[in-house]
Amino acid sequence: MEKFCFLLLFALAFLFNGGFSVTDGTEDGSELWGYVEVRPKAHMFWWYYKSPNRVEDPFKPWPIILWLQGGPGGSGVGIGNFQEVGPLDTNLMPRNSTWLRVADLLFVDNPVGTGFSYVEDEKACVKTDEEAAIDLTTLLKELFNKNENLQNNPLYIVAESYGGKFAVTLGLSAFQAIAAGELKLKLGGVALGDSWISPEDFVFAWAPLLKDLSRLDNNGVEKANSIAQLIKQQIENGQYKDATSSWSELESMIIASSNRVDFYNFLLDAGRDPLAIKTMESSAMIAVHKYSKYLSSNKFSGDGVDLGSLMNGVIRKKLKIIPNDVKWGGQSEIVFSALDGDFMKPRINEVDELLAKGVNVTIYNGQVDLICATKGTQAWVEKLKWEGLKSFLGLDRTPLYCGDDKTITRGFTKSYRNLHFYWVLEAGHFVPVDQPCIALDMVRGITQSPISSY
Image (cartoon, rainbow, N blue to C red; front, side, top):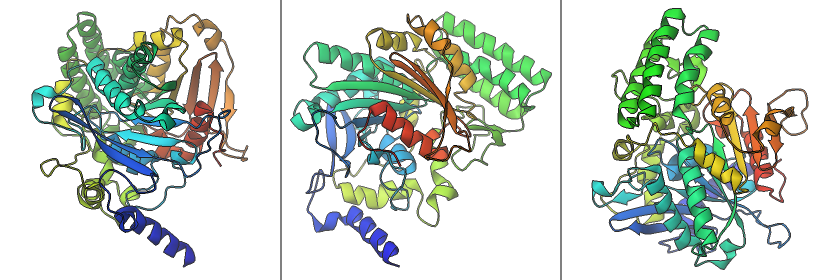
């Protein structure tokens, strides 16, 4: 009963800020939020949490994690925050595995037009990953250049799914801005979780993987490979919008031939994974396009409201600064449509550039993910031109365990210089939810946080 009362008070304090009159954060500074007009008519919403474990130590700098959601057009402020790694879940109950235990957290609704971020004119939506990176760099300048406390702590850009493409372009943009003296920030590294870095490698991974799993037969493989070859040719010819359309056709074909395999957990049928989307019946954009449909999951909503109702209800009231005509949505159609010419464009070269500049790059992948399958991730990693790649590939892996329990292997990892890779077992597309213990410990290692994970 005592524990229940504590949690109830915690939730009420979250909702009402203890009676504080606040428009852009809590009175004690534990939370801050606001808008940055990154361009005329383009407004980006951000939400910053200060860790209760924060240690002010010049010899052990406290890390800050910037979380970038996928989609493109998935809301980090909603999905990443309340569904994956933030301090509270969708029932506004404390999350034991929150990454706030080992770092400060910064969520953004990126690109503009996503979640609570908005544009006054749809023409202001970004058309490329580079444009999104410029907007994010503008946001970071606004937040860090005016705050010396933030400047002293390294920023780690952690991304999921399509967010990985934003992460590598932002990493380069931020690196250049720092070198030019335009951005007062310490870049700690970039982490790419189940990231859509090389669409070509992923579409070629799907058929052989699903055949080995008995979800596709030879006829299905032949059909899938035929479309994948078309996608490869379209990418080589720079026909990226056509490649996006072919990608949608390929997913529809695989869904039909596999009797609706789940693209976020290939061991299940679509809709059976609590975090998986329910695919569309039409041949329009499917899996990544409807990225956030998993937020209505009973497993994570429990007896409470779904995330959409939460964000447009008590969270909007808490924040107080959301314009009346801006309605939160988990997946922005206008953002995805604006980026359909960049959706299938690879970003392997950007990873190479980051590695060459000495930036720490971490790659992690869930074992049972299909959309960004480990098979495809390993394929694009082997295409890197980084001088340390051969040595990295030649290393043996180290097993991962949860806490002191060494009886169950939870994953593997290996590192060489500034490249790090984590294979996370029994996890699908959403690693922090499927394997929270391993994810939290991984993040502690990536950020070199002075706090133990568990």
